[in-house]
Image (cartoon, rainbow, N blue to C red):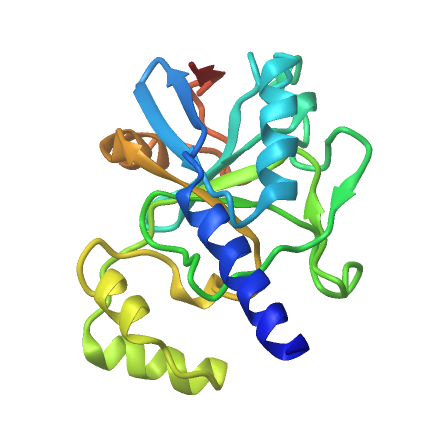
Length: 216
């Protein structure tokens, strides 16, 4: 009976996760606003993001790293007071988060994911406590996806192939960074910000500050 009970418990837990309403957040910028949902499947990242938003941690921070056809990154508290020559990208709340990888949560366009330090200094792939990025990405045809599979030594799922051949994204990041939400409105804002003129460090020449709030 024990295996059956264990299975039933797992099914109940899974149903609870998927049936729970997702928390929505609004990310306001001078380039427009984005509405994002936070995934219940990544509770540590979800709850941490909510905590920081409610404290006003992100208000006034910049999207400090933007790359066309790739992503926009923000969440460094240092960026609030930074001058144009200052290096941004190493700040945070003073802690990291354990990775919450989920093969069903992928880097399609609009994916909200946690930034992190590289594997050489971060073998557990722990996430930054506050820095995040939103995927712009690009659309991939079958040939390009086959090349990615060969290079990464993985097989893309049907879900991945469907997403990356339609809305696009950054498939090479799957399994390496925690995806904990997605933009459901305002995808065009990601494109606008990712295409801003920038310096050699990919810092936009025109400040792209944000204000983030929970949608009640």
